[in-house]
Length: 564
Image (cartoon, rainbow, N blue to C red):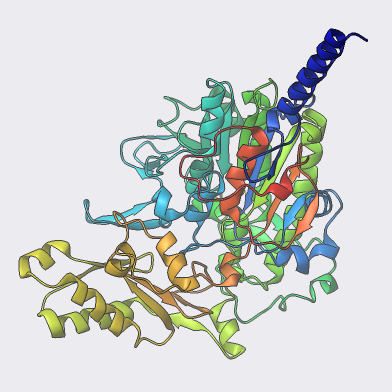
């Protein structure tokens, strides 16, 4: 072959090689690290139609182990066997409350970034407590018009749904559903197509004028035709034979206290002979309420056209009844045991519905929980540890210490969200030393039985905290404009309470350890013991969808989830 022919052939081969390298599925950066193909290239043939974010309120990670042999194949077991499961997933902030967990779910932002520091907090501007979603500038739709309504106005930054809508020019549809307002509103983000929650006064799903001037016609029809009233007088029996619940506390455990009774069966009537708010309040802490929420979710899918077009949509669902029940009966009760089994069956049915309507190969499911829960303190105390810390006596001890050192004034304005709020105007007026007041308050708190740690505003904002796990978790839960002057953390198995039942909110494993599971389109199945958390869910979903991560996201992409 002539030399010119050889040169021409070499040139063509070199060009082909360069093009091959340019468009190769994997390439190397400067350090030689291989990078995965963008999600858009990997999913061209079977695009994702719908992302379903499922939060099961107060689902401790150990429930999926304790009750695993009693699950059916299509529910939790489907996710555990065929999904990407992170067994060492924890929240890394304090406090572990419902609003915080739900805001993190689709934003990847801890309270220090999102501003959602608790279910409620003391607002110094108004001098009163506010909730994470309360909004006096909007009106309730579907309930009493003079009732306080809600919106995501206090949430700082974007969510996955917001980014999906921005990436598609608004074509992606986003809907949030829960029995609790905060659980419906916060995962759905700033500009969803709608967020809906249950109102116990009206006995139906409601929303607010933040989203639209009136409830969509399909929601009005659902509220009219599909009432929870059909459950009035229903009896909640155990799903399995009594001996199947031997791993839980006896049905007549002495640690349970409820106006609705403490043993099976439960009659769902609110203790009344007629329909009303008491019935709806009892109804929302039963498995029937989860069934009702799924009925509403199906109506949303069908009427909003979720999963129909080429722009992936997002549906977030929170199973609030599990938490409402768990607070009363505790994590080792037969009631919580049975609720978990029934949730499993309901998920199995819902997944089958999604498969028939859309196809599970076109759906991504992300499942987690907003927090765990502590044992009922009296139960823990019987085993030799734990108890309740009285809020009033604790606040009084701080007030007395401040009066002794800084003068006989009312220095403490509020105790809320495990925060002590000082009276700022009084501090300025009396020219008191704020840092000294913070130290004095912490010294008094640390003398209180059951208190484990105390941190001051100055320590947190000036970066002078000790490098301990608890201190760092408190810092991640602190947003200066909304937190108080002192943050107090109980010892393990203690919490601030003057009532009955149990709660959550601490940095300990029973509150922080929750499931993190991905399943569906583009998800590589596997079981992973590496450290992870709900903070990683939103950025990982963003990577699966090839959209920009939420603005304040602090999590990382869990690469083990991404199918190569």
